[in-house]
Length: 332
Image (tube, rainbow, N blue to C red; front, side, top):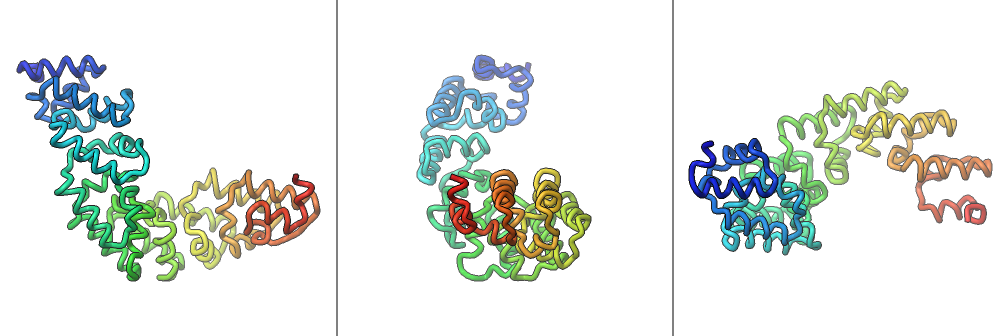
C-alpha cells in the first residue's frame, strides 16, 4: 500500500486504525492530503487531544478529520491554538467554537491574519454590529473560505441594487442571515428577486424582504417559489391578493405546502368557516402556530360564540387575548 511506504506513513496509518478509521477512509484522506505521508503520529495524537479538549466530542472527531485531514498535520501552537483562541473571543459560549469547527473543519486551516481579520474588518465596514460579528462567523464558519473581492463584494453590490443604501442596512441583512453569502447572485439571488417583482412586489417590498426575511431570496424559484405561488392560485387567491400576501408575509412563498400552508388554509375554511379573502387582508395569519395559537383561540371564541376578525383574534399575546374577550376566568 502506497500510504504505508514510509515509516511515518505506517505510523500514521496505525494512528488512524486505532481511532476506528477503516482502510477505505484512510486512503481517501491520504488522497485528499498529501502532507499525511510525512505526518508524525505524535503530532496527530496531540492535535486530536487538543480538539477534544476544546469541546469536540470524540464521536464527531472522525468526521472532522475525514473532511479536513490536514488538521492533524498543523503545528499545535503555530496554527490550531491561535485560530481557536481568536474564534473563542468571538463567541459567547464555550461550545460555539467547537460547533463551528464540526460544521466546517477547514476554518482551522485558514490564517488569522490573512483571512479572519480582513473578514471581520469587511463586515464592520458594512455596519455589522460588533456583537453580531462573532455570531455570523460561528454560525456560518464557511464565510472564512469566501473571497472578499470576488464573492462577498458581489453579494454586497447586489443588495445595494435592491435599494439598501442607508448606512448599516446591508450589514443588518448579512447579520440576520449570514448564509446568504454562500449563494450565487446570478444563479439564485437575482432570479429570485426578479420573480418577486414579477408577482407584484414593489422596490420597497423587496427591501422589506431583504431586511426581514433574507432567506426568501435564497430559495430556488422553480423548485419552491413557483410551486407555492401556483398552490395559492389553486386555493382561489387572485394575483393581486397573492402580491399582498407575499408583501405582508414573504415566507409564504417558501413554507412547506403540505406541512404549513395546506393545513392552515383547510383550518381557515373548513373549521373556522371563513373566506380566504380574510387572509389576503391579514397575511400574518400564516405566521401563527396551528395548534398553539389558531386552534386554541378559535376553540375559546367558539365556546363563547364570539365573532371577530383574524387580526382581532391573533394580533396580541395570550393574556391580552383573554382579557379582550373576557375569557380569563374560564381559561384559568
